[in-house]
Amino acid sequence: MAINFNQNSTFNLKPINKESVRGEVMGLLVNGEEIAYAFQTVRDQLIFTNKRIIAVDVQGITGKRKSFTTLPYSKIQYFSIQTPGFMEAFPDSELFLMFSSGFTATFEFKDKVDIGILGRLISQYIL
Image 1 (cartoon, rainbow, N blue to C red):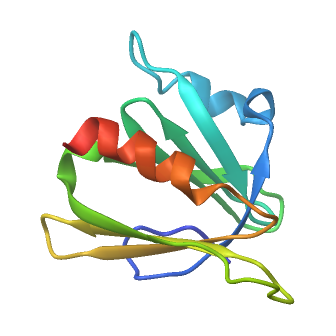
Image 2: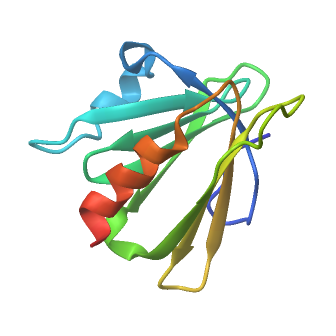
């Protein structure tokens, strides 16, 4: 599923190595900005930096066309996390971000992601 901040969507995100983030994203980073965590759907990526969230939406059959969306932590009003339940067949975690515009983004993480780490990262910048 495409990552699109214009829709209230849930994504099946899996953690990836920070070094494997698409090179185009590196050109978007400002002085002092560093990638903290990176996740991927089949083709798209969601990157958490120390300043914002960057979504890379790969478009078209060839994947050469990409859409980059950036969301600064300063626009988040509040957030909620949901941890996986005990003995779930498909353990997943969810992150809900509520923005000052009234928009809510829902992210679903697979593969035993420690959602508390993302919660602490966001808290560090919105509190």
